[in-house]
Image (cartoon, rainbow, N blue to C red; front, side):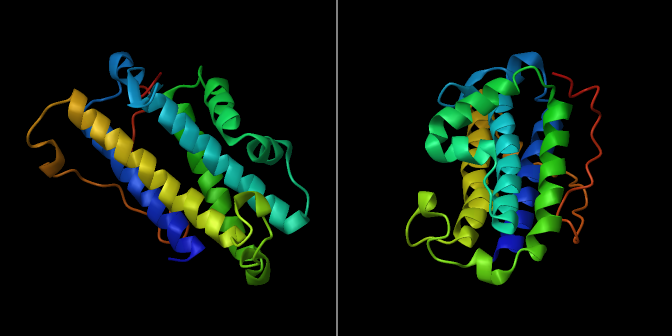
Length: 197
């Protein structure tokens, strides 16, 4: 899987999870803020975390292009766990719609920007030693765009399956919104009033 495929596949996977949440009418305050989806994080916290991580990927691409790290990227490198919790806390007051809009904007930037980063920079071993001496920026991009996202989407799906016991939940036919083949973003038709925090 290359970086562009990782971005698009990871985004499609998250889109499907969001659509499942919508189909199950999951976006009530009781469900949205219920902790335990990922340790003490709620589903809302996981979405906030994925949004912050998509934005962090913006910062990585910027650093590859311009050679300077953003404060956010420096904070992540210094202490990833603290960075993750801090970023979720900063998004505590955001609604579902605001979090998804932030994620989509960051994702679109990544898809549009990535092809402009030279392959030489993306596959340079040791270019981001904080991720591993033998790793490349492409490795981190694939991790952030797909592997990391898959882990959290799996947590969301397991959590809602546990909280919403419906034998046919995972076999329901859910109409999926079209994925834009150029950007990899999904043309969501969501009622943001319904998805308000």
